[in-house]
Every structure is written in C-alpha cells, then in structure tokens.
Image (cartoon, rainbow, N blue to C red):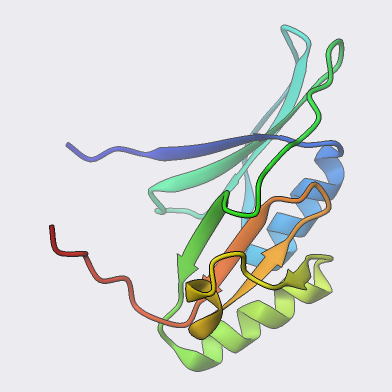
Length: 132
C-alpha cells in the first residue's frame, strides 16, 4: 500500500505560514479552504511528493500552537550544495535557526523554528532504513 502523508498543524497566522513554508521549503499551494465549519486552511506541498502540510486556523475557537522541541519534521538532503542553499532559504523566509534538543540532529543537520515554534530539521544525509 502506498499512502500519502498529511502533516496538519494549527497556526496563529495562515498567511505567514504559507509564505514561510512556501519560500523556505520551496513548496506551493496544493489546496486551500475558507469557512469550512469555522476553519480556514492552506495545504502546501510539491508535485509528486508523497506528503503535504496542512495549516489551519479556527475562526471561532482558535487553537494555540503548542509544539515541543522534539516535534520535528525532518528532510534528508544528501547533496551538500542543495542542503546549504535550502538552509539559506529557511533563514531568508523567516525561520530562525535553533539548537536541536536532541544533539543527534546537530551533527549533520540544522534545526529551524517557525514563528509558532514548530521545528524543521534539514539533514545533510541520505535517509537509510534502520535495521529492526
């Protein structure tokens, strides 16, 4: 079975999330909605990718984002030049670089935090399936 992954997150500002993730991770809007049972949202992804982000805001009962330092999305970028360029885009897009809570992510990667505290790791490595 091939599944598609949606990472859904409440945010405090939809426009800001759309801009930060679009510019920082090179994602584009793949869907959006307004006033759906009191929710507004935008979905960002890449053509052909098996995942996308959904950012939502509730008009009537706003949910304050409450991520922890270990709530991570990790992107594996094995090409060093592509990784460096992606890290630069994250900073220009408004993410701030933070120290990883788990030092593992700082060895070959950099951790970035958005305005709501959600963290994204850009790992300069290829993902390899773990044994066991």
